[in-house]
Amino acid sequence: MPQTFSERPQAEPRRLTLGTFATAAAVAILIAALWFWSNIVMLGFGAVLIAIALRAGAQGLHRHLGLNVKLGVLAVVLAFVAVVAGVVMLAGQPVADQFGQLVQGLPKSWDRVREWASGNVIASAISDQVQASDQMEEGASKLASNLPDIMGRLTGMVDMVIGGLSSVLLMLMVAIFVALEAPTYRRGAIRLVPPGHRTRARHIMAELGGQLGRWMAGQALDMAIVAVLAGIGLWLLGVPLALLLALIAGITNIVPIIGPVFSGGIAALFSLSQGFDTALYVALLFTAIQMFEGNLLMPLIQRFAVQLPPALTIIAIMAFGALFGFAGVILAAPLLIVTMLLVRRIYIEGILGDTEDGDS
Image (cartoon, rainbow, N blue to C red; front, side, top):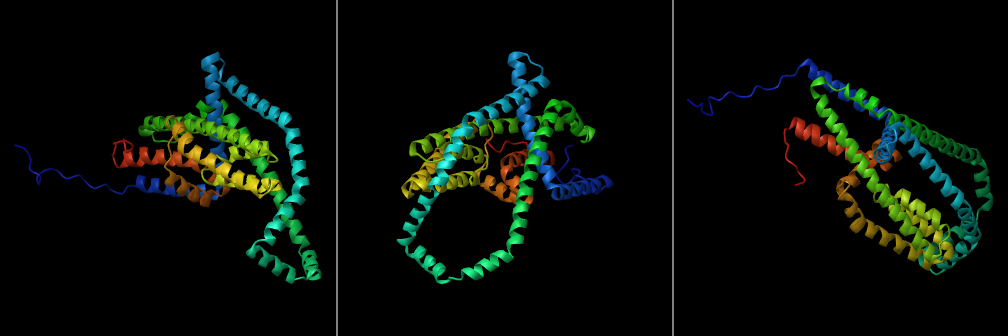
């Protein structure tokens, strides 16, 4: 006799066990560690990203040339160093010459700024206020009294630059070691997962590696195309430091929305030595490049890479920037990829039991 609805056994409510409290405590400790050691976490995450790229290149050499994967990693590193050294040797002198031209053209740029200010009502009012407060001696005495603080700030900036370069070098070294012994580190990470969930953890880790690898490949292609387009456009406009500004445009394009605005502003500022018309053309050039990149290039790339919702990307930049500082802004996109995948696989599918594909 079939049971009625009222006679069917009800699911027993989950009880709070010692394991539940231990898991919650472990999660809380992990969050606290991420907060207090955010710099180390970001360096480690950046090293993992570089290691994935090195490993992917080494596996490509293994498939096509039969080269050992570890030797392939070293070959990829040496090839990257050779490319960077070649670019520096070939472009170093032209960039230095262009920089010299830029310095020589700064007085002309300043004269143009003054001419523009003289014809602008707001700028003229500001200039009159500055000239009205003619207190040079008082300003000089204040400057002299603040000189130790200024020197201290300069020293702090030098220390920050040296510390940043040291961190980047350390990150690169860690990335090479991780790429060389990736299976060992992967097995170690899997052993931190309870035995009953290790198979699923392996699948999630493999999926994470695949998505991050595709994102980096697509991002590298996008950055290269943006750099080439910016370089050609700046060269045609006769802007000083066109090569350097194009490289900045390509590199900063890794940060969505903020990077293009930053690189476009820098290029427009440097182009002032050629006149305001040139600066306006440069601004229009970068606007056109970003419209092409956002509406045509990136959608084509994302068909083969990872598609990130624009709204979530902006929120991720703000959130990870607040949590991890400038490094969080740079790594916001890959961090968003990791967060989205873990939420989908662990929370939505693992806890809620919803296995439907929300993208269909």
